[in-house]
Length: 447
Image 1 (cartoon, rainbow, N blue to C red):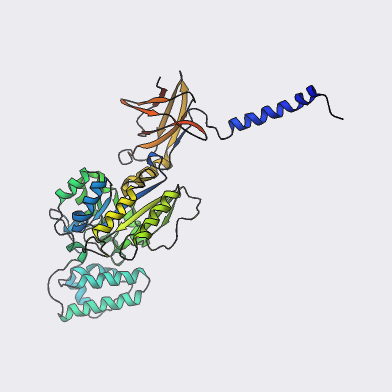
Image 2: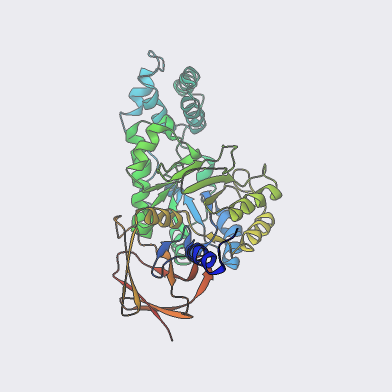
């Protein structure tokens, strides 16, 4: 009824060997196999703390907390209000007297709105910026007739002489009083990113292209002259606008916009979005959340927890006012509590500036890894095709090594480092930092 025992063994043995081989080989990484980790240091997620407007209390109260906790951040500053800046707010176009006179007989319409709104803050009277800001917001929301009527009201008041003569900047510019370029250079030397928030905190959907370009380009020029090229990478167009016309101009001036970064590998959830990261077929999710008086501390902490529990999420926290100064101002004590909570997740979260996270993601997405074996060592070539002077962030490599290795040395040019071998379900591996485009990386066993 049954075959003899030797026959059974002969029939079953190949199957057993095949299954054993499958168990051993399944999911195992070949020594030399190298991956670029999703986030720096192989963390679960990334967090960028960003501040808008550059109000003085951000540096007086919030910055010392971050310095104590050794946490970087990005400050989007309004350059026109800083003493020593070369460029200040002004209207680029016809003499404003001509525009004012013309408004007496020609109502505001689709042909002249952008010119009138662009000139609105520079008509020689105080209080006009408020009209410009409101009209630009209406225009951006396609409420064009309401925007036109608001411009007509402004120009009628100017012609009637009921407004006080002079120039009055927006509140955000006034709240910067006390900060200097010397201060910003000192903060930058400590690892903080100083970035542009335009010259005057202009409401750009209401500006024509010439005046949008002036606000963004000249702010960039001042930052370059005062801070250096490195700090001209990021910007935030004021009020968080994502107006398509404005974005097209801004994209040509700055490599990274917090407003919007259209990348095929990035899902964006902006500040007003009520969505949580959820599922996506993208490599990364940028999740912007605004820390303000309408966001209870437990909710703010839950954003951090969500980012920690995922592998693909970049939490971008937006802060305006601090300690009674600025929009939706948060108490310094609350920020201290919140930042300590973020710091407590240090083993899982990479906290970095907006610019650094952007660079890391772009480098990783464009990088190529080639590896080979020679004389028992693993040789790795890491390259990317981006602008090498701008994209110079080190990437974290995860290289699998033979199971008998305990420690390894990594050499790239004159740079030498050591790493301890750790393991996961795929095998033994190393984690280490490497700069792309700087030559062959040699990984060898350290006996």
